[in-house]
Length: 122
Image (cartoon, rainbow, N blue to C red; front, side, top):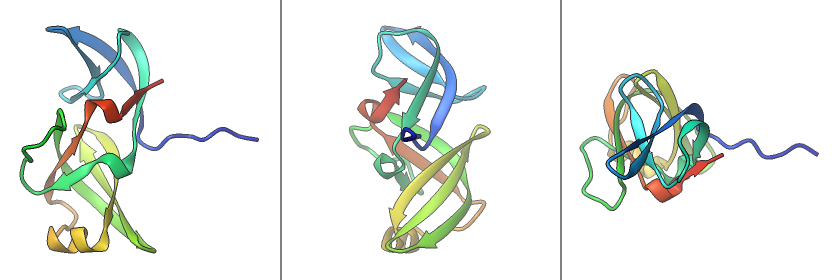
């Protein structure tokens, strides 16, 4: 029996700054994590917990990253989008309605927003 491999699994470093812990995913991009650890780590974000928008959102999500839509595939009741953030690809799941309303297409800049509590440090 094999274990579940989380989506959006990243390898990086946790760094402390001003009492917070940041997981560095690229040269300029980092995400806030709830962890007491520092140093090399793995972290994952459920693609269904990421909000995708054309403008920054005012929300309780502490992580907002600007990226560029790479592509999207439709299947069943959902759309799977891939977004490049500073050279790191995030997978995001959204409804067909949301995808259509946002008028998304490859190359468009989008914002990813998600809670620090939604980041799992492994």
